[in-house]
Length: 361
Image 1 (spheres, one colour):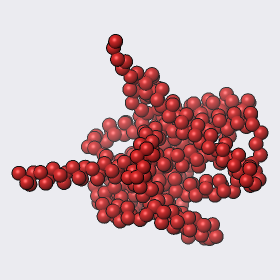
Image 2 (image 1 turned 30 degrees about the vertical axis):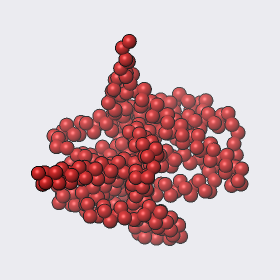
Image 3 (image 1 turned 60 degrees about the vertical axis):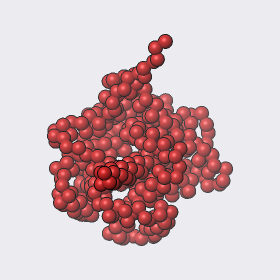
Image 4 (image 1 turned 180 degrees about the vertical axis):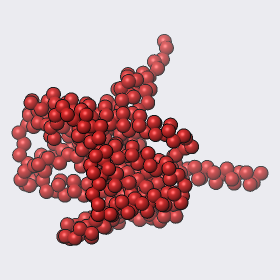
């Protein structure tokens, strides 16, 4: 009787560790989408402190997003026919991409005369979106991620994955520019981070060693390299430092997420909830941010270009409101979609849940 009980305890322990590990990655995903929303709010009158913060975020937030996507894909992948997998990813990524592009282009065309519109478009954008993210450059992520999902399932063993990791390293550092069409340029520079996420998901020993690095130490190293990089004017060294910043930024957020998962239940649960809406937030956050910025610019006269204390405080108050709307607005859209519209749910790449059942009296 002893052996089966011991085996069951080990199985439960392993399951618990796996669950904790995936929760920390899900928290990383939520932190990442919040950083994306913050990073995409950078008006011309931003104070120096905010501009520095924005530059730090941009140095690692998209590699982090790709890393998390790769990690979760590899950790949760299931046997499925390639064509079925591709169709599912097309529904999840590309249909929302086209829908978001149409919505954003339409809003820009309808509001460009009455509101401030950043990166205005023309009617040609409605066909250009099939090969370029003209509605908003940030949409490259969906296009590039779909291309990655076309590629990575073909390298579904440990040896094949290592081979793909080598190829992605070569693509990242090779001094050849890829065309912007079909987001091939972004595929070149971000395939590495997705494949690295897959690899770390499988390498238990490496993952355990990384987890021992305190997140504050990782942040201090990250900040030091970030400052040092600004004084270096060498293309090769800057490329190496950029990759190193992305790696350390990923380590910082991953271990911060692990700390949050263990220490702060309310924050953990909030971030897990936010992660459920991460793709909808990604698709529509700039629309909500743009509308809020236009509304603020039309109703409030602000001048935060100087860096005195009052102007900086006013700027951060406005930034907080805009970023909050950029996160919460798409979540509301998502919740409405999954409850009241099967078509809308399909268009934003989520499952239709239907209205909650009411108790009979």
